[in-house]
Image 1 (tube, rainbow, N blue to C red):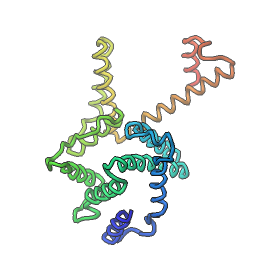
Image 2 (cartoon, helix red, strand yellow; image 1 turned 30 degrees about the horizontal axis):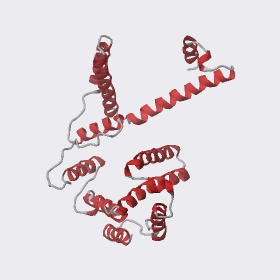
Image 3 (cartoon, rainbow, N blue to C red; image 1 turned 90 degrees about the vertical axis):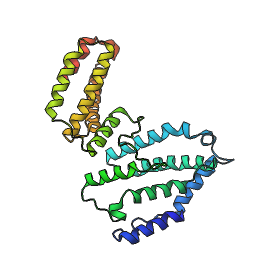
Length: 275
């Protein structure tokens, strides 16, 4: 990984604002991780690891990323450190598979992200200027739009459609906002939701599905206008619901009852009583 350190040494020397010792990489530890992964995939390695391919590992990459997010939410530094290691392992695993197939190596992965970060931060590593976070984002999108093999500008709304729907909606709004598409006043969205609700009761199933989708997107837009993270807002509400559910379940358990031993109307009454 010599190039990894060389690139960063160059950056540190140019910027002259970072402490090299603080960001020093331990080559032996890094190489040990790569060697461990290679051994797991080797002739005398782990049967499970040897059976994997990029397709089978996709779900683990996603799961480990969510585990890392959960650790960040807990503010437990030891847990965060551990989960970030699991995410890093997934990166090394995919790179090992590619190396075996002659496609690319972990060096290519690190070199690529080094070059990308330098290229997309000309206000740090070049002569460009960006004084606000919004200016940085606008510049990032402009640079990203030119990054393709045929040198044709790519559309601003080039987004991974496989993202979870709520995250996708927020990214769509972020990108439209970066090109100057300003959301309407929040009261306009409130009126739109009331209008959709009025139509819902008389709509057929297909129309109801469309109305639900429109109302959900409108709510995400309202959150954007109010500078609220819709993902965090929904997660807090879900957590609140789970806590309430567990409270009711504990009451049933203390009464030596199960969910199937109590009538629906009694469950509803208990739910209201425990709010």
